[in-house]
Length: 421
Ligand SMILES: Nc1nc2c(c(=O)[nH]1)N[C@H]1C(S)=C(S)[C@@H](COP(=O)(O)OP(=O)(O)OC[C@H]3O[C@@H](n4cnc5c(N)ncnc54)[C@H](O)[C@@H]3O)O[C@H]1N2
Ligand code: MOO
Ligand SMILES: [Mg+2]
Image (cartoon, rainbow, N blue to C red; front, top):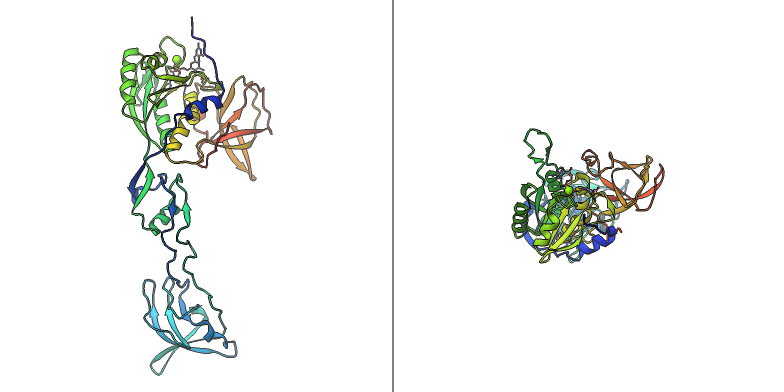
């Protein structure tokens, strides 16, 4: 008798997996290696930025009060008593009708409270001294980049869990983070099972196919922010697979296998979980593709038994494995970001189970538009290349027509959703 499996709703399946979520760990890496990593701590301003008032222009620093009488008819003259560039600090005490020639980025002399751009001044020499004159008045504070205008000491600038982008790199450098606290990348083990599998550089043989799941899942793992430990491929032999899976699990934070989870004569994962005394959280989900997705846990470590069918495998990873990885990367919202989009073609299949259609999401005239990225069958590889979203078509629905609004999950967005189900 073939085992009868009881499909559970997707939300319930995700919930069961999330019970085994673990917090991330912190490690310090050089700022040079931190781009693209996830922050393990909030980044707080450790000083005001800038930490001194400075000139935003090449010009002259003056006391605004001395400019008050300046007009088109009445030039006011200033003696230029010093000349500083960025990085230099004037030692002069600037008095009435005196100015310091100052360049962009240089610290304001203490007595000065305005900067006049070079273009608005006339410079000349008189009796061996340097002067400049102006024909308009300035207010106190004109053309000054004030201390703390960019950041105030103590401000929380970047929340932990953020992916370090070029702008965050600039902030880290500004505050002297030579070493950056980042989330340690979880290590995800990966085995592909299947006697039919050839290596990528093998020529085709009758009945055999090249292993594409390993390369696909490895890339999904990396996209999610984790590291892959690829153990290789396994033939459909119980003992070989049992030993391999058991020993691999010890070396990683969680283990993904692809294939061998259905009810076939060579689908050994269920028996392997059994022999390992792993608790199976579910082995059938009311979804398409990926209904056979099986997740088990052994001593708190998760074993993701993803389907061998490429599209089912892909979907299973994004729904069940990705949020666990995101948790270990200190993300606030662990699940794929959910939005609404407008269907641009008819989708005429019935959906007995919730369907996750690999789709291409585009923005047109400010609206999100969605269409399938290829044939919607779980053994299909080609539709995956163009997929940047899943369209969610709820179970129990029939066809969807052009113009319908549907839920979509974004695959390349790291904003996330708290709970999209
Ligand atoms: N009697 C039933 N048969 C099947 C059921 C069912 O409920 N009753 N479920 C079907 C569904 S749905 C799926 S999905 C598949 C899942 O099968 P498995 O997860 O056990 O995977 P395999 O049997 O090992 O392989 C399925 C398919 O995928 C190809 N494959 C496997 N690994 C790879 C790889 N690394 N790269 C590329 N392609 C791979 C494999 O050759 C098979 O064609 O079961 C249905 N059957
Ligand atoms: O799990 Mo299968 O992919 O539902 O088609
Ligand atoms: Mg099978």
